[in-house]
Length: 249
Ligand code: PGA
Image 1 (cartoon, rainbow, N blue to C red):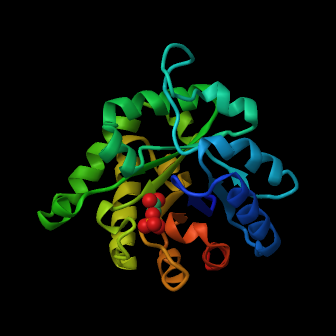
Image 2: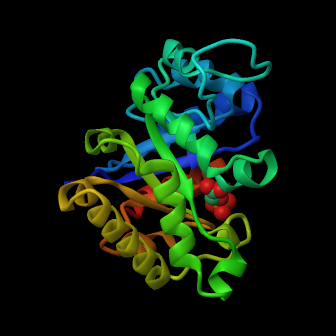
């Protein structure tokens, strides 16, 4: 049985006071759910988030991480630094990291490898751009993103991988993939993993959908058999919206 997950990617939003306020609102409103709930505030507020959620079931993730153990990488954050705070989940490969910070599949393969070796869970994001979908290349783009960054991992490493399919054209645009488009791609992803590894690796990996998930469309998207939850951007910044999305799973 794979885990249902709803994760909130806060991106570069919420200062310290706003982070604490949103987490206390969320803690008070959190519905009973069988889903794992994760929030990813900015690095500087991870410690505060861990402290705020000490008696909560919500988990804290980082939005990025460097692949190196330590050293002369000014401005970067290592796996050990995250672990020392009690953060053992990291988002890697978000399309904004790929687009604005030049992160490519080869770099992401190194980051994922480090995360696995260090014992962090990775929420690995990937997805096609609008032109890829228009030219009907979306399946091959997604397949190569997975292959290049993840398929060197041993089958056993997949226990710590969570996938987040996020078509770039649906992120922050208000345009969502239809539940059928999401299901079609998630089924393709699962088959690609089954072919590269085996059916049990494919069946056990949680595949989240991300891209303009809102309270009014979450239930339909989550009802699809290969959609195991969501990675939520904008709507995770508003407690009532995020809670409604969690309740929809
Ligand atoms: P969005 O962002 O929900 O605001 O579209 C999703 C994401 O970037 O993970």
